[in-house]
Length: 115
Image (cartoon, rainbow, N blue to C red; front, side, top):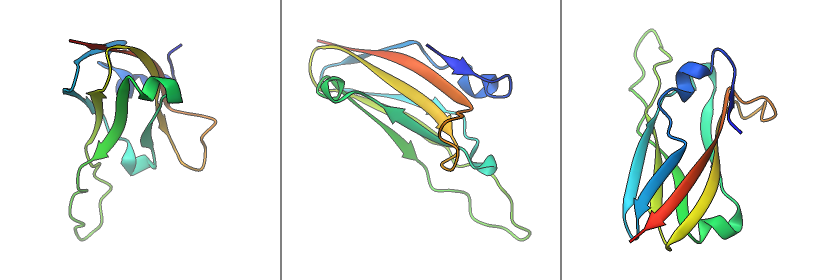
C-alpha cells in the first residue's frame, strides 16, 4: 500500500513501485528532500528480505550555513544492493522523527535481485 498526503504527493512523484537490481550491483534512487520542514527518509525491510537486498538511505553533506540561516535541503538517495537472487519488499517513509505515526509519504516498494 502506498500512502501520501496531498502535500506529500510531490515527494512521492517518480518513486518506482519495483526496482530490479543485478546480483552484486547497486541501484541508486534520488529522493526529494523535505529536511527544511523536519522530515527524514527511512527505509524499513523485514529481516528475511535484507538477505536478498540491502536498502539504505544516504545523505549528502548539507549546504553550508549562510547568514542569515536558510533551511536548504540536503540531497537524499535510496541505495539498494543486490545480495542474493530473489524478491524482497521494503517500505519507504518520509517522516518527522517526533511524529512517526503520521508520515508525509509511505510507499511500498518491491525489490528483485537478478543475475
